[in-house]
Amino acid sequence: MARYFVGVDLGGTNIKAGLLDEQARVVSRLSIPAQVDRGPEQVIGNIVSAAESAISQAGVDRRSVAGVGIGSPGPMSHRRGLVINPGNLPCLKNTPLRDIVRERTGLPTTLENDANAAAFGEYWAGAGRGVTDLVMYTLGTGVGGGVIVEGRLLRGFFENGAELGHIIVQPGGRTCSCGQQGCLEAYSSAYYLARRAEELIAAGEPSSLKARVDAGQMLMAEHVVEAARAGDALAARVWDDACRYLALATVTMQHVTNPQRVVMAGGLIAAGDFLLEPIRRHHRALMWKLLDDGPEIIFATLGNDAGFIGAAGCAWEADRTGQW
Ligand SMILES: [Zn+2]
Image (cartoon, rainbow, N blue to C red; front, side, top):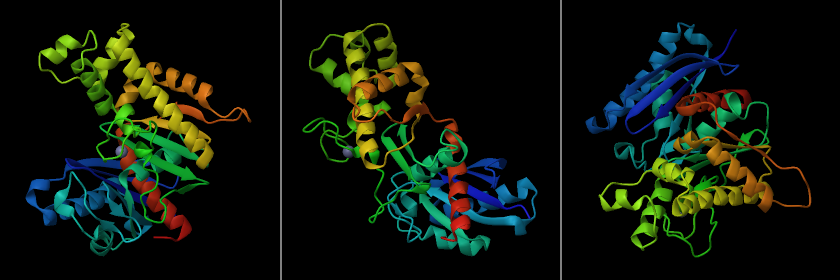
């Protein structure tokens, strides 16, 4: 009998869910509002109903559904099945979500960090298909990370592993939102690279972006990309640094987990080759010269679906290994 897996991606605005088969094919998908303002009972009810709808819309025999995977914003605990303190879902603070969903659906359930789940999605069904060792960066407001080692998600003892955005790439550098100095995130996230350009302009450096800043408009990463493409020196430096620090963190990860593929995801990949080429160039210049094997650096392929696909993948993995 075929086996199916429910994946639920828990966001601050929407809950995405879907049903996948063992070959990681999407059989059904849906998105419903999370309704965070209506309190925890409503949000939990919506999570359960999203999972149930994914099954009913697929029209498969419920007995063939092997389990549910949920991707949750952190901090959370996979081991305890606990949502601890999610910034964009404050009403779910300290909620034992795994056990609640398991009880209400009657299905085995696993809870995973959303960045880890997205990385597992690319590993199972996207840009990482066919490899065993993968590192993924999600370049959005922050820099998220996920690491697969020998086919398993890396979590670590305290379950805070794979926080790639907080690898220090510049000792004594820019202060990160986390309080450390010189984190990758402070240079290479879409949000913070734009803040860096604003700060350099405010410090008096010339740039074609100054008019926008002077008009009180917030700089976005795409403005920096556009100006860098047009030859603006400040924008080009901020962009090149963003790429170089990603290459540097990749060299570090090569010495730790030795990935076969490094996958870039998130809003910043809209820049296309303008992002990928400099990362690859810096990586070649910075990497170890003792061996000539290194990871392929490529883009993610699942887009915003990586979350629910990966959550289903985590259920597939739990079912396969018997470790719920
Ligand atoms: Zn940090």
